[in-house]
Image (cartoon, rainbow, N blue to C red; front, side, top):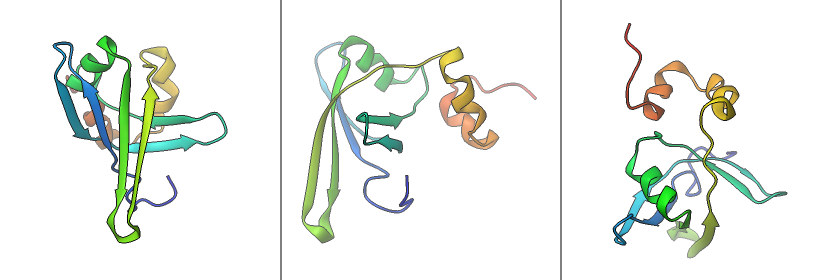
Length: 108
């Protein structure tokens, strides 16, 4: 993301739990590919967000910029990448940040 302090960095992501209840959380938008319409949002594979998206692989992403009186809502489908598909991506993540994506940190 170009603006590491802008409102698009931390959008709100709304999903539906496997039990049918709405859930809203703040996500970190890591990258956007406007050409193909992809957004990169990362989380731990064992998180509640992943459980919800496995059951219902769609969500609403909302960005709000109060100063500009702007609200943007995007309906999105999700594809989860795991294992070998994310090896190269995680290789570029600084070691301390990797703890955010692994519910079982490696032992030292």
